[in-house]
Amino acid sequence: MKINLKINNKGFTLVEVLVAMVILAIITVSFINAFSSGYIQIVSMGNKTSAMKHAQEIIDTIYNNGAAASASVVDYSDLHLFSGNSAQYGFSTVNVAGRLNNKVTVVVFYNGGQKHVTLSTIIP
Image 1 (cartoon, helix red, strand yellow):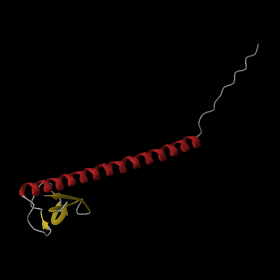
Image 2 (tube, rainbow, N blue to C red; image 1 turned 90 degrees about the vertical axis):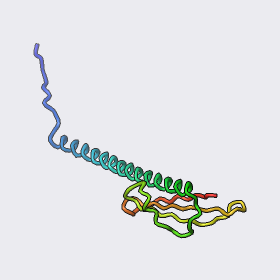
Image 3 (cartoon, rainbow, N blue to C red; image 1 turned 45 degrees about the vertical axis):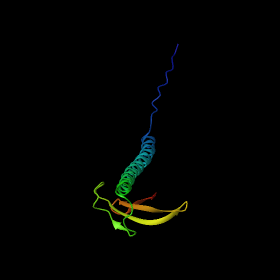
């Protein structure tokens, strides 16, 4: 009896391997791009959160020291609560339920002055 063994020498060709590597590289680059932009957003939101905290601390300081100072915008950068930022605050008078109250607006600049956050509150 004759046994006919067929030997299969088939494998991946060089072209198939190169195509698979190119597809894998494209997928890898897209994932790296997504992760890096996500990281940039996380850092940016961290800076914004720190600036918001700084603005809230300024409002708390103004509230604790009494809000009836002046009606002009004053540089408040001597309050070193968050280094690297400049902050300004201003007062205006608003009528709330028939009573005159002070409206305090605090603007804190971050990312080298390119961005800012603004907080406003009414202090009776």
